[in-house]
Image 1 (cartoon, one colour):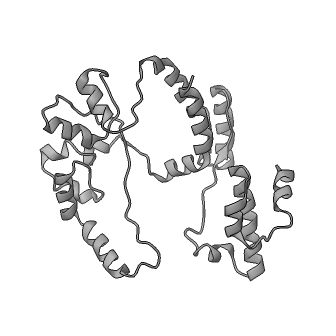
Image 2: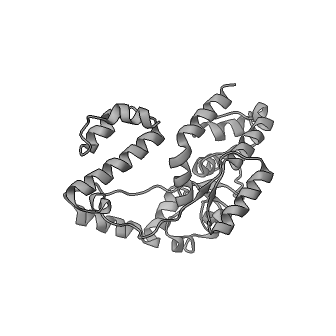
Image 3: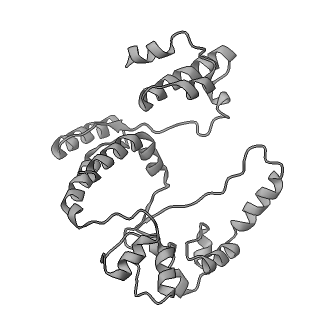
Length: 254
């Protein structure tokens, strides 16, 4: 890996990180390591900490995670105990991924994969499937049309969308005012009434009537849910997206 990185990097301008992102053909993990080195070189050349180049310190300390790769459950337990003795509080392991694919193997013949959000409720109504993972809003809208569908919230998965203000936007004060207004409980209640999805302001859930609250991802409905946009989830996918996607594509194509 070192030779591969050196073969591409030697003779290039280490201060031109934009060109590095544009031209570097290295594998993602190797490319990440080279980029860290380039930022370090830039910081030393300018006489400032790298954090200054990247917009300032976000947090003064970061948590380190131990990683043990793919192991048997017995060996994983032994390694985990060792890292706990060393003071680690976070452990990365592929054991969960192995369990997930083994479970998928047992149900593969009974699973039908949808590619568009509308397919899940359509297949349920037609009887093509008896259980589906679906967007809750799609299910509620189908039920409003008289379709006999229900929701199971226990251990569901939910995601949150985000508002973004583009850097250099000409009306930034207006944008902040709009975000401040929409983040209040009352406007979010109106949104949930118009579109059967959950509010991001937890106080808004207290203002929803019982019938609507039962149909949106909020309050008790997400008490056991997995947040796909959590810090842990994002960290996992940043580290594993390429590998898991390759494995998924190979598995589903068998």
